[in-house]
Image (cartoon, rainbow, N blue to C red; front, side, top):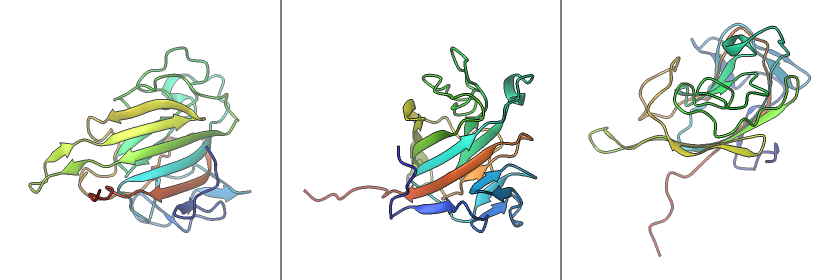
Length: 206
């Protein structure tokens, strides 16, 4: 899918600076930006803008850590609404990826296939996110839904999430939330991040 954002999208990372981002505690974001790329450093960051239903495009690169294994191998995470983590990890070559591998909805759903490229190559996530629907009593009547393509390959097809994932920035699923990127101590790189808000529903007219 194209990295060029549609005119209705917000370039939440403009490949120039972190003016659209803050640390998890609200302080100015302090990740490193150079040559159109931001590199993980000093804590999680999240967008100032909040989102409900949306389409996300994001590109990431895992570092080459040949001696590392498992969760120590190029770890980060993309938290949708700050609540639902899509794992970022160097899982290249794993035959049957699990719930903690790259592309997983962390500890809920393993990716359908391993779509990972080798470390030091740019990869893409294209995400279609539908927030949960609640009734007048704020009870969830339709759960969070998620479709994810990694490098153009479908790895989640309209899955219904079980709830927020571990490490979330908030539990109030009835409210819009930010895009949050995780600092897990590894030098992940990100670029070309945009979000297109989606309408909550179509017309009821014939």
